[in-house]
Image 1 (cartoon, helix red, strand yellow):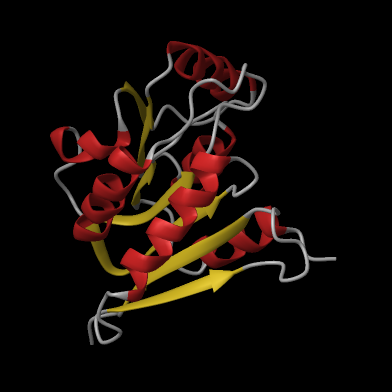
Image 2 (cartoon, rainbow, N blue to C red):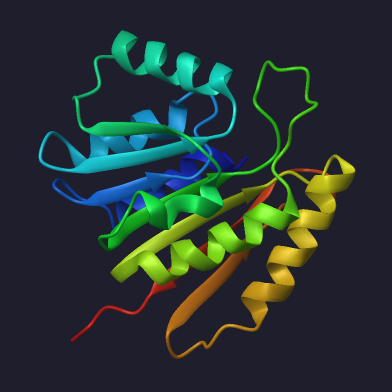
Length: 186
């Protein structure tokens, strides 16, 4: 059976390398931040966002425990404010939408900030860059968020970006993800 998390990382590794800049738009407990940090190495940098202090504390502890390089900036702010903190092109970005794992599930990502965050991420994306957006349709906001994202992404020019959706077809409430890849400059 396909492991969606492994598949997401596989695609990101085709674009992200040592020394690159990446963004974890939804840091959660820091697992995507860890992956990005270890991939870009000491000469790269990762910016990670979350609106919950619990996420920032959990991520900070996790990154120290797994001995990530000191190449990250943890930001207590909404992902839609990314351009206040990041003013350079990025090679990769990860969105893991929904709620903080292990939380009371009262705080979730919301359409009102997710779409502006995705628009900003696309604008920051370097040539031969990639964004991964994991969607969790098992709760009402997640389902609505996924539909909104698909509608928006389907309107983007295929001559500038390649947008792919990967979904388990016979499991309608299972997570799925979108990949947004920029065309490499020649």
